[in-house]
Amino acid sequence: GWAAGTLLLSDSSNMAISRKESKEKWRVSDGGEDSSSTVKKLKRYWDESQTKESAGDTPRTEETRGDGEKPSGKKKRKPGGRKLVSRKVDPFLGPAPISQEKVMKFERGKKTKLKQVSNRKLKGRLKTLETKVKLAKIQAARFDLLLQEEAGFLEGDEGEDTCTIQQEDIVDAVDISSGSKHFNLVLNQFGPYRLNYTCNGRYLLLGGRRGHVAAMDWHSKSLICEMNVMESINDIKWLHTENMFAVAQKKWLYIYDNQGVELHCVKKFNDVLKMEFLPYHFLLATCSATGFLQYLDISVGKEIAAICTKTGRIDVMAQNPHNAIIHLGHPNGTVSLWSPNLKEPLVKMLCHRAAVRAVTVDNTGMYMVTSGLDRKLNVYDVRTYRKLHSYLIPFGASHLSFSQRSLLAAGCGDTVQVYKDVHVKPPHKPYMVHRVQQAVHGLQFCPYEDVLGVGHGEGFCSMLVPGAGEPNFDALENNPFRSRKQRQEWEVKALLEKVQPDLITLEPGKLGEVDFLTLEQKHKERVERLGFDPLAKEKFEPKYKKKGRSASGNLLKRKKKVAHEEQRKLIQESVKEKLQQEKEKKKREKMTVLGQRSALDRFKK
Image (cartoon, rainbow, N blue to C red):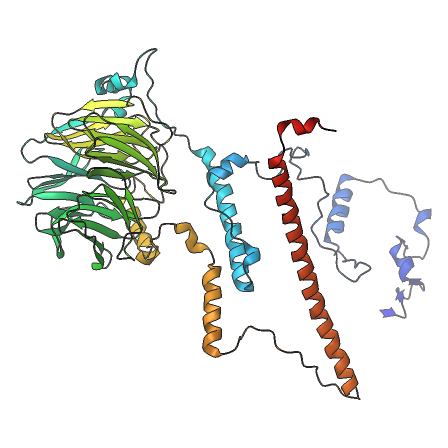
């Protein structure tokens, strides 16, 4: 047994060995003689295996460090980077670098000024939000490399104008799947036709003036439903999915499903002439012959707003995809911008000397194009409400439409003209021209496709326009190839993320900012209501201390010390303000002196 730090052996050996000596490898024979005198035996292979097994069976003792902690089993990596199996250092450590230009492509507004925010909790939330936005930008720029599709384009031969190229030439030059997207539907009984594509560009809806309604999957050319409402049709629109659509008939507004079954007859919306659907707000905006602008929330079936514009009959309407503001064209040549939150127009612009015939806004929400009876096509910058370009079209444009890549289609009589980069420079000639059998009655570019749908008196024409559509789509936002289950999941998420109509403003980027002016106004109103300032600094009162330390002399000293500190802060702030004013004054004087100097003064000594 163990006793007094020694290890006792058997009685026959009559020996006592200390702990330190026991660690050394002593071999004692039965007779008590040293093993060094014995003859060494030859080692065999089975002896080596036994010694290895015995060494593996011995329990390991955990040695403690000097600080008392046990050493961890993991080995620390040496600095110098991760080593591969081949024991070579990885030359490309960390994520791949991204150029700042690609990151700036996904920039969305300015950063919030955190220094102006005094609330600590709000400041922390805004800080985390900024980090999330920064990460989203970098990830979007990184995944942009995975987008393989490129936008199409049309180039003529040397000395050839692209506007002279016919649709048959384009069909012969492209592949079979792209060529099949050009087709004509001869529907000469119930025309002229209006048309509408779904947000993902998969389904097409046609509505004839004399009551004919048809919904189809135009990719596979399969008919979904077809009917005649036995009443004149003014406009037609898909709702949030391809399962429902709205038809503005002679008297009232009707809602149908994709089998042609009537779901609702909304009698509050009468004499509707034009419709626009706001997909993120689930709002159907309508304008009528009585001069009313009305909003219908299709998720709850409730009328949100009914605004009397006091401008008479309204049949020109467009929406700004960036901020969901409705643009209305009036017979007196003005264009007004409306929101469901106000009874008065947000902006009123005089665009033409005659009545406005068509209005459209591009996808970025920056540029608006209008056409009037004076046969002019005007391009406006919506941010500054300033006219950029104006050019004369021989017959005037009755219908306008912007594509996803800023191509402008104009319907002039029985001719469709497509213009390129109208907001950059005034075009001298159109990019493409196509002629249909009768007058154009409806125009719309198909999303994510190089296709322009044209509705006219003799039916419908699908026109190929290279470079019109966005080549890559976001499958979580608008997926043309989604299944039934994916559509149901998307519909639930869209309803949960529905934007309230109260948030429709001219500048949606200001919604996330802190309004400091209104905070100051609220504080002033609160002071007037209470009669005192609740956020004002309280008067310093020294804390009572025992053992004679709260004598009147000590209290006075502590009060003076605090007062001197406050006075010092005020003096420092006033000195800073004076220095700043002096710098600005010197800068102004320098600018005035430089303005008075002549060009020859630099030669004076």
